[in-house]
Amino acid sequence: MAVNPHLEQFSMRDVLRAVNGPSGKDLTAVTVNNYFHRNLIEKKSKPGKRRAYTALEIIQVAALFHLTNLKLPVGEVKEIAEEIASRAENKATVLNFTHKLGELEIIIFAEPSGKLHVRYIYENNFNGAPNSKPDLSQFPAYISINPDWIINYIVNELTDILDESGELDNQDDHGEASREEMIRANKVHYAELNIKRERLEKKIESEKREATFEEMKELAILALEIDTAKMAFSKDEDIE
Image (cartoon, rainbow, N blue to C red; front, side, top):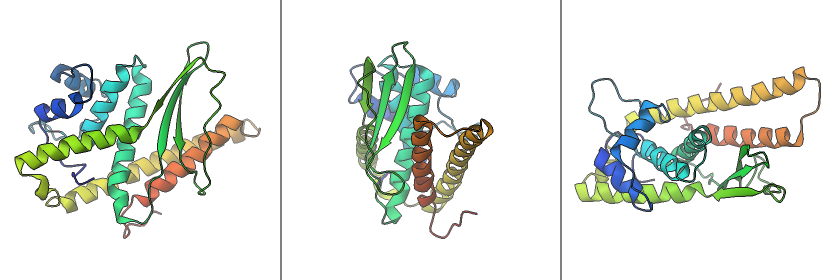
C-alpha cells in the first residue's frame, strides 16, 4: 500500500469519490457521519480538530456501505468491516517482511432459521497447510466475499486522489509517527485475539469436554490471525 494507512489526509469529498466508484448506489455524507456516530467505525481524531479520514477508515466505510446494501445485519457487517481494515493494515505493514499474506475469503451463510454465520477462510492455516472451505450444501444461501477487492479498489482510488493533489510523494514524511501508531494498533489487535482464544479455551476446559469441530476451526483461525498480527510488529519490537 503506497498510501499511508494511518495519516488523516482525506476529506469527505475524497471519501465519497473513492467509495462511490464501483457502487450502484450513492454513498452520502449523512451516511458516513452516521457510521461514526453509531460507533460502527472508531474515530481517533482529537476533539476540535477538523475532521479528516485515514485510508483504513475509508476502507471500513466502503465495506460497511457495500455489505449493508446486501441487507446484512449491521452487527455482522461491523465485524466484517473491522476484519477487512485489519487485513488492509497487515498488507501495509507486512511489506517489510518476507512473509506474504495468503488469500482470504469471507463467507457469510444462513441456517434455515435465518441465523447468519461468518467464516474467514484463509488460503493457508497457521502451520502452512492448505485450508478447505466449509461444506455449505446444507445451507439455503451464502455470500462469498474477497476483501482484497475492496482494499485494492479503495487504495487505487486514494492513490489517484493523492497523485492529483501532489501529495502522493509525501506519504513517508509521517512515517515514524504512523509507524508508532501501527505498532500500538497491532499490539491491541494481538491482545484482543489472544483474549478471544483464551476465553474459548477456558470455556471448553470449564465444561470438561473436547472442542467441537467448529470450535477447533475457530481456534485454528485465531491462531493464524494471532501469528499474522505478531508478524505485523516492527522487527525491533518484542512481544512479551
